[in-house]
Image (cartoon, rainbow, N blue to C red):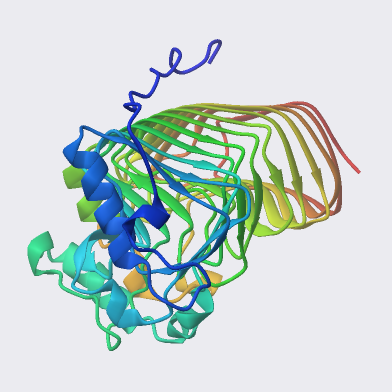
Length: 421
């Protein structure tokens, strides 16, 4: 890929109307719920065609917040929006997305659906108080049941979860089928599950974010079924993948047929996480036209990771990663593998695998100008014997690792000026 995967993103259209959360009965202090105040403020702006809702400095307790078209939610410096720990505050179920599957589930904490020109900006913090949900990780039965429903092609409207018994945690910020989205400068921390998860969105800018969450499945930024995405200048410290591109699981992904495409990821810093930049494993609609550059990955389990499961289908193509610096990588600096989720690899079990024989096509991937000061292993590429990777080039790599490289079913992989010490 010799050029950026898309032209400049269009400017947001937010009308000049403005209101303050205090004007709608909100009480600062983090004791009295401001859920109604947020809803009334957003409804008031929507009735005027949109505008900006400002949250002043202070501690504001709330349930879920639902944005509407042409509205900006702006947090002033010192604003601390704290989401309720009461699970009932996130009922009744709404359309959501979990583990690559559409589901009727608990209301995401920050939500929008079918909206255009929406923004979240400012120097404040959203605190998901995810520890109120994290114990549910010990019970994956609900997620297994959801994945089984997808395999059986149960209609989405009948995939009804959103109870304590189901144990399917909501994501923190989930925008579904939205267009022209800006999220800038805020801090998001401690989600029940993923932190930032745009699904089916187009023209998305995620800039200057601090993403902090070390709970289970606390992925940092996960665009899924998205087109024209810019992710830049973010700090990510998470309990799962830091930046992860996805496009649906198995039957849902194949039916959706919406690749995640035209994505730029640049100037990202990590502290902890399962992977610095990750593609997959939910990629059944495909991932293509991706540029990742000028990033610093430190303290993650892996640096660069592309993963798919047996039978997942989809494709990964036209990927360019360059100018990446790594240090203190626990496992592989670079890993590309098609066997993610197998029982042999110690994952949850067969319910997390596809039930079809279709492999993922991997082609036209260039990873160049990468340095790694320390890693457990330099490089691991495990292709699919039925469909080995095509045209994968690793160029100008300087990797210092305890263990060297392993390549399996990797006839289409070329190494140029690769030094492993």
